[in-house]
Image (tube, rainbow, N blue to C red; front, side):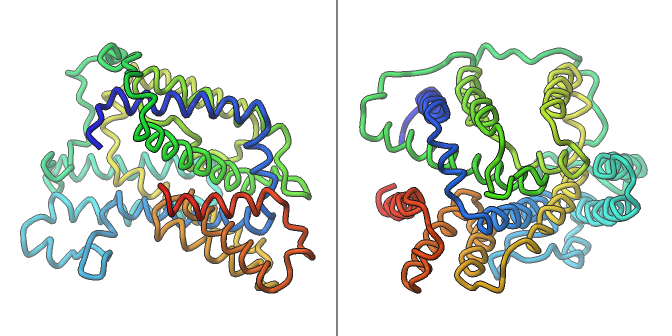
Length: 364
């Protein structure tokens, strides 16, 4: 739209302020509680498929093709000489998935982390013997840490507080801001639903106890992130890896935050960890999220079909928020048209959300 990145950061900042207000007034909590229990489980499943798909893409196992997406061709990489760059990383990622899966089956403590480290070490060995050749143009970098860059916190001054409020009253700015707001609200809620569902933290009514703190932390993170100079800081689906490992309390998040702070000083090490080493973790965590599908009531088609739509929408439309949108719209429409809405006691907020989602597709 021709706007600068400073104006984009301002849009993120403004939607973060709105986020804080929505969290203080219980609007976001009400939206969370309005979503039916079966749909909550479906969101967890959809997120599982989505992050597994992302992992397969990061590992280059799934690539663009004549059929939209296809599997990476080892035959072609051997023929054109690219095996020692792309091909070997795909092979290492597949090996990493199998290693991580075995560790999960064996119930080894820290299985996902060990899977990343082992795959990374295998990558180092392959680079050392010349089987893997880094090629920055193809996005294939050295897997050995570059200590010559030194240790220390990178300079944030080029992006810190670079907000531009000059276009804040324009219609285009409002469109951009609401686009950010919509995706952020429902991506966050979707992730929170999925992770909380997998952690068995939801009560019998599908509510998450003490949810306000989580929502407020997310809202403040969004606002602070814009000030520091980054796009929307939001709840991340990779949190499911921590849940799968046994994390259940805020102490898990605090420890993760401390480690992130330390990683700023150790960036040469962490930047050397390749995507083919972390991709197996996403694929395996995707499986762990997928297990929530057993909690969906498939005997009731008015519940199962909206859940199915939400599940397939997330990976195919590449968005958690789109999956929630499709799930809510289909849930309301199917139950209304089949005369089940009154029996299900669908909340007024669900009807409002369905209308807003439809308007979003028309207006934004």
